[in-house]
Figure 1 (cartoon, rainbow, N blue to C red):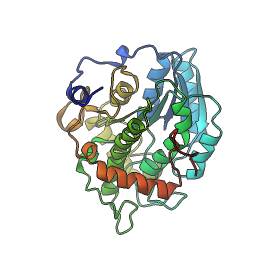
Figure 2 (figure 1 turned 90 degrees about the vertical axis):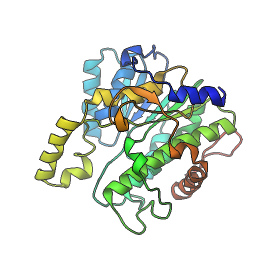
Figure 3 (figure 1 turned 60 degrees about the horizontal axis):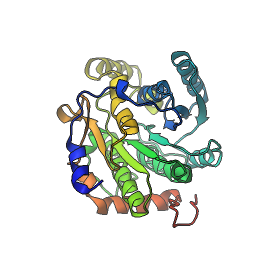
Length: 327
């Protein structure tokens, strides 16, 4: 697809699209990270309903098993399994990839993430939001790349956020080297997701691969990202107020999953697309392609972030002309 058609595709609204329009997914294998709840579970459920084999990649064995049982009850005959993955630990990402024995991966949905958490470090010493949301995602995708490239039409969908538009991307403070503000670190990590998704497409194109990489913003969506995990320790008042806010101002999880499902399944969607809700400030609405984002055009920063991510994670993407990925 040429540049003009890509631009047109990115700006064309699809207000009538619903998950009912998802084509048959039989024969596709999808890995969905953070699939035990929220947008991840809603995405996995719809893919399973359309016939995909779904792997729930979850941090908690107990919550993952509950999600798998719920999925089997809601989608009779579903082909699904649980595999453990903790993006806060690069060893877990390596173990997930090294233990992969299901053959080609048709779709990887990089959904797992954390938001607005108190300051903490991952197992590898990274600021937790940057470490989980970006570096964990970067490492996992690179380690799974050979299995993706073995599929006939592989896709990688990375969940960013409408909040990335407000990020002041500071390459000198990505890892909270100088200061930490939870909201700043969150939107910066989500901007990194968008840089990553678009740069992954550039590199796939440069090596002649069929892989298509998309980014999405879900809009304001009810999930446990603001109340679970590290946020669960913020106290009773925080929990009550946040849950009230989620009920009043945020939309149902199924609506938030629409952009992920759109990017995962629309046949003609070009690589490098950014799918967002079409409403005001991308907070709610139906899937639309948006190309007027600074991060999409800023290839220089995306390249610098990619190089830094390789160094921090030790993962180098094994395109067919390269040597094997190392970690």
